[in-house]
Image (cartoon, rainbow, N blue to C red; front, side, top):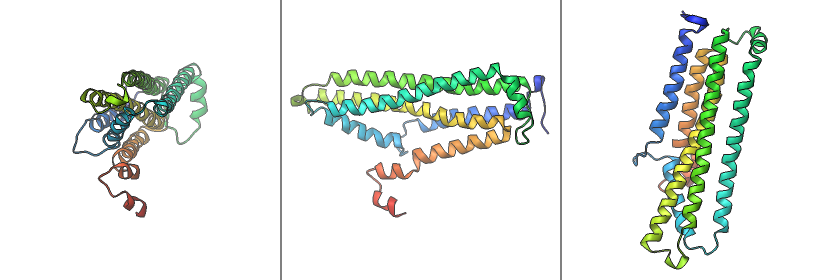
Length: 241
């Protein structure tokens, strides 16, 4: 039984939207908590970032470091630009909502929804990618701050001093924070794909949200990439499995 409220908004739509928000926020809070007992791609990669910054202290000319950072910044800029296009496309759909509803009315696998419900779904999708854009923009700013910190690195002959090691650690931490922010933007893309399932049926929306959580969890905590990068694991066994 599906209870319908005002303007065709149903109980299952409320439940699926609540599950979507709870799953997204809950997973983000759990995955991004810095628990030393939990090995993740973020925790393992931080050691590589720290080593990168320490090695950079010894280089007279940091052309390779600049190239690496340039690649990272370009990839984030691409996702930020794409988010803007998606937001624009979603907003444009409000103008042709009646035509979209007419096109989907004859599709048997798409649940019938009122105009208000369509507007709520489109607004939810737009908000997801607005969130993603702000995360990507903040990640870019954090990488810019990291560049400034690297610019303050001392000369190579002072690379082993406590001051030099401390500033290298700060640069690595800013790098890690920037990547964490970027990861949150990427998660918004994943959950945005799940939100598309809401246009088909609320229960498919629930299932798609659960699938996204499982996929992200496996990639961040159980992937072969993590086992290969983790110095404590037997990476040779990864390729034999």
